[in-house]
Image (cartoon, one colour):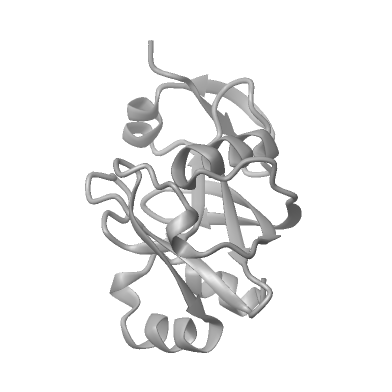
Length: 164
């Protein structure tokens, strides 16, 4: 059986649980958790989303993210996703801002932030979810996302504005 997605109202209160396809087909609002990873040199870990993804296939995004499922909190979800998608365990995360999005998909994203100093080759990526990862300087990320916005999911520019 496929996991059920948490459906929420305009204020992020849980109002039910539905399958992902039903949530998307009906345009229901749901929850997403995302992780913004930096290192001590100020570089940001970016992930190219898998090419099979419904939302933003092949686009650059936060290091890890996931749709919150029934029985999960935002925090439990991002800890699970960080381990599954990029092989991180026992991470220390700080809660960041929560942002509401109203586009083709309607959701709240709760951001989490952490600082990790690991070489890129020590991450273990899940190829179905993540095509590749790389460390990138904040200045370069700003420039690339401004000049080539089609290569990034929209939340990247929001994160740069928030100075996560």
